[in-house]
Length: 564
Image (cartoon, rainbow, N blue to C red):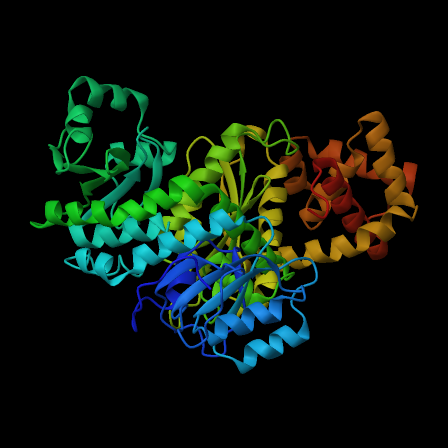
């Protein structure tokens, strides 16, 4: 069966542990008759030409990769039965377009070997590499070397750099930043205290400022850091607290570095020792990030979008997204603008950098936060603790503090389970629309970032929903309000704005005139002319209702925010 004789062990990392460490969206569990807690000894390629020996149990505890075998093919059931007779923990086949046949699923349910499928877009070489990396990472020998003073590191998903940063921060009693060799921020720990100026600049810019890099290079700090396996100390100065740093190496290759900064209190006495151990524990995570990080991130984002859209099986998508299927979540939506002056059509590099910062903030906020992007929007799934009703409150406030940008962020109601995520997303998007439309009526210089929870703007979101339904019908009608709006559009007159201000002020001419920055007599003249020219008689309650609806719809169209 396999291409080499395995090391036969009765114990080892479980199939569940292995699958939990690989990138989401790569393998699907079709049937696991003994569950996924079965031990795994190794991962090998299945050799269909090798003589089968059921008694030898040559594949005991192995994950067999059945290269060239599709689950819908005639030979699939024979390969499964051979693997089962040989004691394999699992067999992986290519999924194909049709999926497994009923006979194959039934046979798998009657045996002991788990049946897994490889999704399209992932080659066998990639699958083999990921599984073996996960096996090494979860093997008892590796765990034992990392167990001293690193509780929690061994249970992290491979490549979970944010989880690693938070875990190491707890160990050293400070703030952690994980950087690549070019001093770009890969992850940072949650901020329990106000960061020092240098940490703030580094996190907001997603990289160490260039002048600081030059300073560290010229002072010989980087030379010391890259030339030793030990911790290097940088004393506190007027811009930053004390720093401890250590390089993360794989052989002679430098994968990155881990930086610890005093975070409102001195670093612990064992901080240096914890960093040494953390640097060893970080090797598989940084190796994974370097090799597979982008592909894994894309797969996770696709799974998050599928959960938010309700287009995927919730439990499978939750596994692929790396979130707990049995935990309540709130959905936060953040929309970023470098400036509202140029409109909302294009998304530039400045907006993307803002989204990068927001995504890093979300990853550091609490374990289990996952993100996905769409244009200028960032979607965040925020897990709730037991009994917590508003898990995103602090993160929501943080979104408002990103400098040199305008961010509109909203949070939907807490979803008790995964099926409620689409409704929470829709509500959060409505909150963002409310904030954006409020800003659209202000001068550009006065527009600032704004955040809100759904419960704070229920009435406004209800109006948006009503206008979304009414707008198509309104466009098909004609009447006094339509005529007034069209005249303003063609001639640049201000009749519609005057009527809208009058209605918003409940008929108080003085208040409405001040909002328009005109004399009350000017406003009275405009209202009289609107009645004479178009028949917009504001003494008629029906006309007032139609004018309010029509002018709201016109304002939405003018700002390009209709149904977005």
